Length: 315
Image (cartoon, rainbow, N blue to C red; front, top):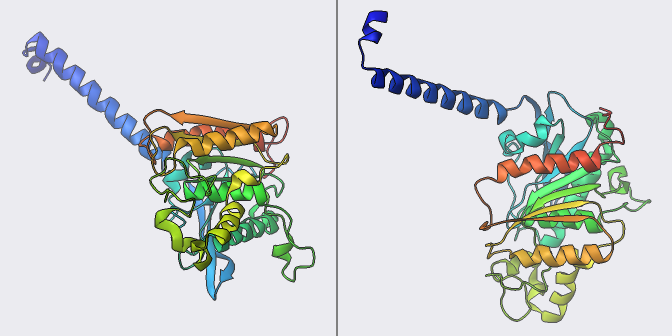
């Protein structure tokens, strides 16, 4: 075999060696990528956290092999439409799971069956449920992050701006819990429904987004009523000095939710002295191929703002 190999021209031997090394490297990279995107997790899918019109509201719990004692509520929502129990893919949240975060993928009933206002109420209930059962999930109830994209980003900001303690006299103890979150990392959120700017969803008359009129209920076609509904559902009008540290990734070529939605939100938060970091993705539209790697920055953000002083974990 050695004599056969030496019988090849030198240029061919070098080419074959280079090809072999390239193939081996690609296989290692592909294998490493597959391994990274398939973290070991303990899943509990379809946990009921409430109900809406007789239908269960559910969440999935993804607990990593080496939990750090901290939880992230992930808003499963796009266009205020959600999924079904068990659909939250672990690979999508691999950077967070590998950092030790327990993920709570919160689903809701999709619009227009549920209005956006009802959806906001329901995801508040989801965070309250997680906090109420924090000891069962072995997470710190005072250090819960939230994440999502587009409508999921909007819902995350609604929790960050309007989340808080429930009624102290609520019959259900879950409803007495706080729905506040302590850190936010999101993609291209809707922040101001009353000022849609250059969005392709802007009807031009100050009304609700063109494709989502029914999502805001029958009163949304009444302009006086819409001004109240739109304001109540727009995070930009509810930023307080308790607003948690927030990281936003947004593409500058997004025509559905234009970059200015995040820019104006950041400006308003800065006026109130709150920490908001906006990262602009050049050429990014409503999503881009490398978003998964951006989750590494989300993990760093949560590490910075959720971990106890000194970096020790308390699972």
